[in-house]
Every structure is written in structure tokens, then in C-alpha cells.
Length: 92
Image 1 (cartoon, one colour):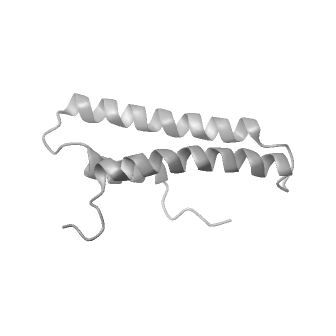
Image 2: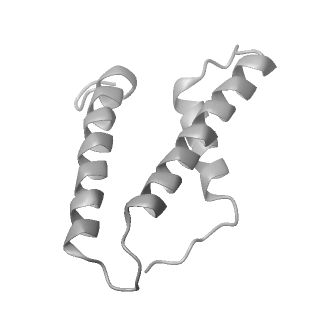
Image 3: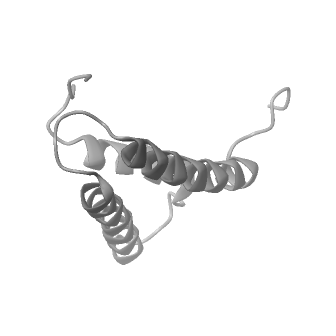
């Protein structure tokens, strides 16, 4: 398992997200509310993973299926996000 390279991986991910998505003119309340929603999403994901994994150190078939389901949902969201927020390849 890879080791974390920071003590604040979710906070670091939020800062990257904020730079990509939140307007530089956004007020403090908007940034705080966006951060709260980001961390809430991270919390729900973590709690979901912890709730669906079977006990024990070795992954089970059900564990793998649960992770595949989460992966598919997040990839679908990521694709929609990229269309809206990332420049198309070949364009400036």
C-alpha cells in the first residue's frame, strides 16, 4: 500500500480542486461552503468504503465488487467534470 506523502491529503486535494473550479473572485463564505461540501463528500466516501469492506486483511470478492462499483461511479462523475472544467486536448 502506498504511503501518504502529506498529513493533509484531503485538504491538499481540496486546494487543487479550488484552484481549478472556484472563481478567484469567490468570497470567503463561498470558499468555506465549497470546502465543507468537499470534505463532506470525502467523509461519505470513506465511511462507505469502511462499511462495505468485509473484515480481515485480505480483500474478498465482495470487497473487489464494492470497490469496482465506487470506481465506476467516480469515473463517470470525473468524465463529466473533465468536460466542464478541463481544456480539451489540442486546445489552449
